[in-house]
Image (cartoon, rainbow, N blue to C red; front, side, top):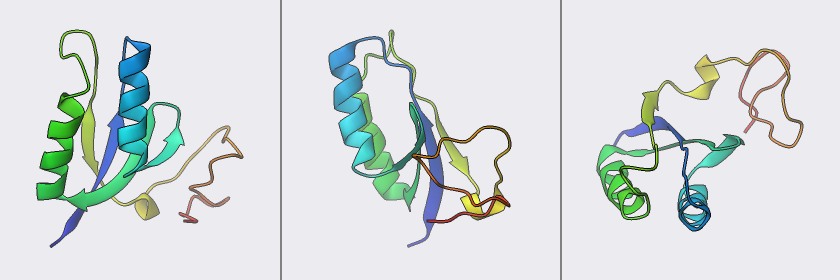
Length: 96
């Protein structure tokens, strides 16, 4: 099965839900920036993962956008980068 790349970002209003969601997502995705995760999985698996995330969040208080994206090899970063998280080389190529 073909895997699709995704970016998940979140804005969770309550600390316990935030921690539960962070644990859930960080088991499957890389965290290139605070509250932003990147990874890939099949669409079917992502559908199940979305259901699991929906069980954690509160739909009226929390924000959880999910984006289908191109692989990071086709991306680049400009500006200040965090040395603790290395996803790009100096010329913008992925270094994972």
